[in-house]
Image (cartoon, rainbow, N blue to C red; front, side, top):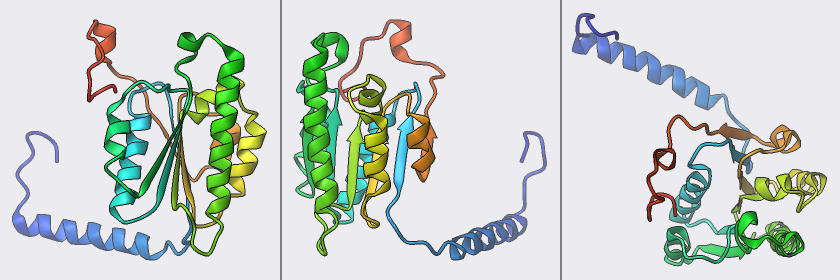
Length: 209
């Protein structure tokens, strides 16, 4: 309804909402595939990792077993690391030594990424059992590790494409490769409209970290 248009009557609103509900119910009834999904959060905007952590908490709330492997990001204290400890359903692995401009050591960054990736592969394999180890795996900043050349994209694509059917995997980080996007079920690209940092505002605890 546009500004200036007459207010909708209660009866008309109810009839319109009934039609919307029927349309949505019909769409839901048409979806019959039940399996885990591959989700990619990418783009230059804020919120890629935050959205993934929200999914991890949501899954834990349903009693699902969750793993979070953080690439690139170092061992500096963040709110999500502290919060995740409150959820026994979530296994958290930090597989990075810090941002590349902080470490300034490519060989060390590659080694840390490889170690984290091997942990992730083990988690994927452990989820093939009759009692899967995990139902959701978050690979935070994996896109960045691939973009930096720390992992071959072909290796990552093969592992994700061959994941257990019931396992869902979320990959975050800017500049997601087309090969990963091609095998994903859901891809969200976040773009920046405005960011406080651009206005000289310091990163704030609880918002940025």
